[in-house]
Length: 278
Image (tube, rainbow, N blue to C red; front, side, top):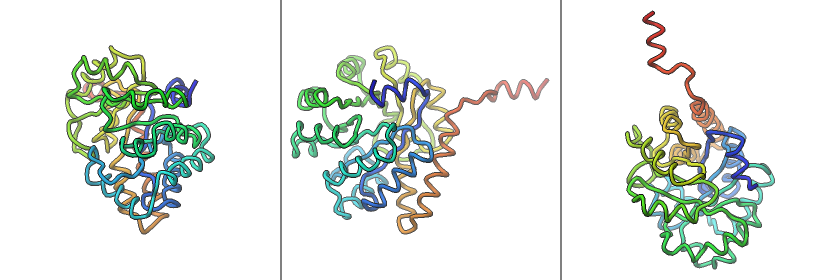
């Protein structure tokens, strides 16, 4: 059983945090990752910085820029993953990347190094399912899960095709557009979770726009197995980039609040109102 499988087998739902490797610097990035894990992130997504992160909104895009300006390379990312793995032997680590990084390195080499560093999965944001044969054999060879992405606009037929090659868990994109904090999540989220649930036994985790405890509660109520928070945490890194102690404190406080919302309310509002009215 992989670390990802083991996590979802023992916890439901789980909290997934996101960070860009090398933001705001390599050593600081290690501190960010360990703080997030120590504060309660059950799984960590680690983005490899890229010059054209088309799926990302302004907050995460600026994190890619900071990491690249700090000189972060793919070699640095693999070294960082090894150090995070030493700190947290049981925590699943997923690399979040764009295909050009894999293509330039060579898929065989990339997945070999990902596995050797301690990464459990790879999420390739911009690789169409029709071109997945470019990476599938190497992911299988080195035992690295290929995390699938499904959007609200993905047709049922295409969902089947995407899910046929997926492993680890499924990343459900909650809304149309790029990553970023939102005031509210779309009303059709439960429908998306339910529709995909009918097609796979893999755990379902929801991301994009999730940034507040009430969003986490919405995701849990929709029936998802995990919640993914990115921009809200990356924003805290940006705001405290010159105050490392403050950064760690802000991240730990935010993750504690968000994780607390994973627990379903034992007394929903309607029941609470009925009790008050009695």
